Length: 374
Ligand code: GLU
Image (cartoon, rainbow, N blue to C red):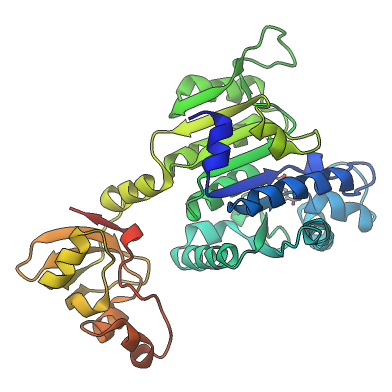
């Protein structure tokens, strides 16, 4: 599949927008015409059924002028203050341009913890899933105002890749001011060769290329982009680095603009299943009856009705082993309920979950997307 086809066939796409594309560094004004052209592109993708998610930088660049902060390096607390005033303006600009296409914007500010702490990860993922299902376009940025140095990711390339992995996006598009990866620094070497596609995995050679000659600009440099590629590829997400400076950056990409595509050998579903089967340490066991076993074998989810026993202590989102009543392991998966709640609802119909627990959780105890047969 070629790059433009990848874009057309992707169901869920994350578009990351760098500050330099969006904000005039002198005045701190948003490039309105460019943003309008991006909104048109986003609306066209949405209209053909694709879920679009924006990760946008630019809060600090917009905000600093409004607070009268001088140009040059900001202290951490100054950039936090700048982000607070810039984000509201940035969100407003997105809201206005997308409203012309009847699209609703939903601001989501995340910190590193939201992708590392299991509980927060699940919450962030569920919220984003719900937003896209309801037809909104999430607008994501790091919560710079509260994220201090130790808990800060600091760049939106890696943030976007983590979000892409978290919500199993099919494609991640990094709109930047470079048109991809070169085998040496193109600003210093006229003979530098553009790399149109990287397949499978990132080699040390590729990483070294970015590590030496192309890393001068801290955030948004090639190093963070390759880190993003690594995160995306291991989650089965295809990623493109493309020059987004011209109007209609997504349309241009679709029409074959020069870029680098990073194509992993798995898709998000298979990558997630691989991770469940191999990387997770099970914290407990769910025992199922024959009816449930047959359902699992035919590709269905595990419902509470077919569960006869629950062993161990685990939380919602922990890995569990699924066994038959005679102790045979038949699957591994991620539990949608804690062990305590699972014990309370086991053997009951899905419609009984809410009366028993007092809240409405998922219908399934282990969803089929979170389940791998042994
Ligand atoms: N979160 C920062 C902002 O919105 C940008 C981080 C980056 O440059 O990638 O200003």
